[in-house]
Image (cartoon, rainbow, N blue to C red; front, side):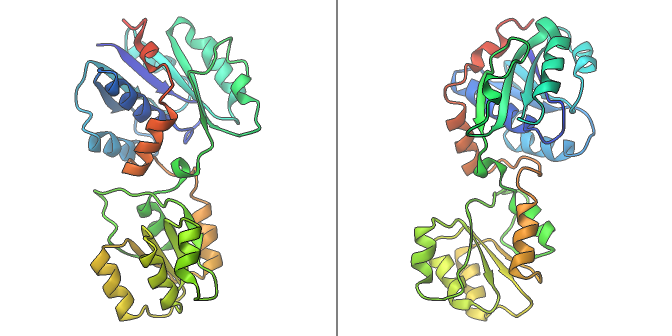
Amino acid sequence: MPTLLVAAPTPLSGKTTVAVACARALAKSGTNVSLERAGDDANADSDRRVFSSLGSGSGDAKIIEIPAGDPSAALGEHDGARVLIVATPETVAEVSAIVRSVGEALAGVVLNRARPAGGEAGADYGGVAPLAVVPEDRQLAAPGLDAVAEALKAEAVNVAENAPRSLGRLVIASIAADPGQDYFDRTRAESVIVRSDKPDLQLAAINAGAQCLIVTGDLPVLSYVKERVAEDETPFLSTKLDTKGAVEAVEALYGATAFSADADRLRRLDELFADADVGSLFASAG
């Protein structure tokens, strides 16, 4: 079975993101791919859960995400495998060294989190042009709600482990209650951070279609807000942190947590890899 190893010099470079994107793109072209996660490094179990949730048990070819670092050992374990390397703007030099070391086993390079004005897309990866350039994307970098709840030490309602959702477009509620709903509509808020003493703004966020409500401070949330949360099944996180502390805790999670396969993120991946020549990944695979 043709095998592709997805490697990167450092953890959290986007290996899981790229593996999922390539598998989905190949599936659209008629090649079903199984996804596997090798190793027992940090995030390995989380990645396996993601792959399992995508129904990636068998296929015509195999994509294996391997631990960060030198892929030589993994190549030795999988005869005829090829290597797809995930680069970031910070690891261009290290990627060039890996490109040289894998030689003919190289399937390509994907540049992840490319900056709008950066020159990394034209960098020298051992003479190899990137298969795809994935821009720095806040939706892809957004943490899952379970990670947010943990970081905030929050009481979580309507946040299910088996139904992953990412934070989406995060907006901080204004101090004034009027016109709250117009503000959330205008800013296209998907998740809202709002103080616990602002029930009108909490309801305005729900009315505007917010996919998650993060309530800060140590005051009790009014019963009619809780009733709306239950009625609409809105993910609801209540933290004792103040708004500034909550924002700082959430911001630290962007690009620093494991991939979460929620529907919005998968759709965004499909868009970003629509023009990538993923069919070439197995072209010379034995």
